[in-house]
Length: 82
Image (spheres, rainbow, N blue to C red):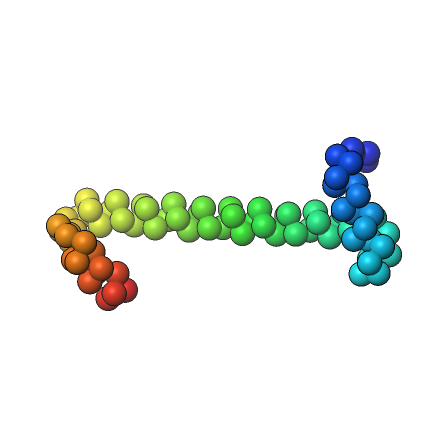
């Protein structure tokens, strides 16, 4: 697999590899891809959890389980109780 980096990214990767934490530029890129993969997995998990929470909220609304909040103070009180 081949890919191109901007000159700035190439410079960053080479400098990072030269600091001694990695043996070569390939290790830096592999680590970056692992971190990207983990970030994407976390983002997908958060999105899934958010969708589930929205569905639960919609179901609660459908059952009439609602709280009317008509002021900032009521909103603050609501979140203080969570």
